[in-house]
Length: 511
Ligand code: KIV
Ligand code: ZN
Image 1 (cartoon, protein in one colour):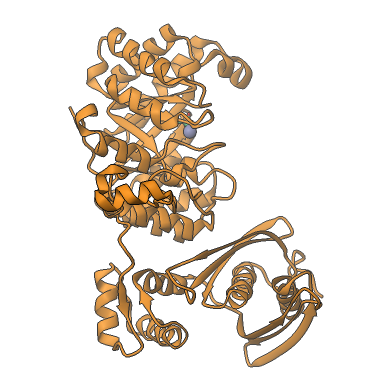
Image 2: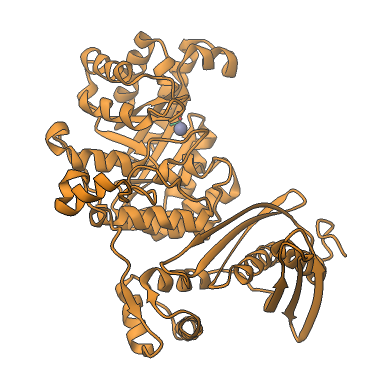
């Protein structure tokens, strides 16, 4: 009774928010990391929403063995059938079916009566139950629903077979004491409430997603729906790392536990940043760059005398170890392979050769190679598509009294193509030259750069989002040189786009 089920919805609620879309391959990588983190449930997507979502839920169901895989569906029969079509491969599958119960939604979204919504909810749960025992029902916008109606729907969906009933604060409107009180009300009112797990799903519109989830736990909820880095619709969902570390750090207060391997929290946060290219704000609790940094003199003095003066948890407890020097210029292939195995990677001979070649190239440019560098090298290789254009070299010049220019040489099959351009800056100039060479002109929508490890010679990772007409494509690349990383990231987006479209495609502008 004191175990809190951590239901991760990074790949569903998180992924559906702007800027966080992921390919199926990226969703599988993220699901593997969530399994390492030991979340109890992975909500892998909303299968009826798109073919891409369906495919991701199906492949994650086939791939992940130890975690419950959940798919979202409205209460309609066709949604539930489609969800099961994707989930049927999972070792442990959950159907999560939902309908809104607040009068605002019932009137404006559905133009129906409460009674009709009630019947639809019961039928949906029964239909889901015909496929699997593990059925979750969500009363969307529960917090703004009439309490009496909500209590009735909770009672009857449990009677219809729901094993988990979720009480979302869909629009993040609740104040913490009110939300705790709503959960208490349900425990006091619903006669069969102990026949199901009561879950909460709190959005963060007023910045209260985590505290509302914790207030629900104090009042009997035993599942929290949350996301890595708190991503999700609008201002996001309750952040997994904040929920888990609150429960861990204040054990004596909450008197509950989770199954999470907290040492995988920081790697999970970084993995999401690396996949989506969306950085975490530096002062973000738990996983922000400054979360364990002590700047003020008085703080530093106290911290040096005794860490407990200013540190309530350690960076090590979330897997934010001091960077380890792992490899050098003279490290051998075997040692490299062993280190990768320790990090959880198993590469075939060709992949290992390529990665080792890249390690040596990097060692020529960078004195110390850290664990994060190795991870970045291997991850960069896992593209899953063929690169039509390869950057041979980029040379740029800029300054406060020069017109920025870039010369770019690219290999395309047996051809080597060279071109130069001027631009607003050296990166812009390089992008213009690449556009001319590849014949594929895109509009840069976002550009992010982050340092992978430490020191002045650290690897920089550039992530770009480029719009080719109405198709937005992500590109990512690494280098110790930021202009090179920028050019490669843009070319990566071009290659990714061209892997699905040809240059004769009307979307591709011939230059
Ligand atoms: O916010 C919400 O209410 C949801 C439901 C589908 C659970 O995401
Ligand atoms: Zn939500």
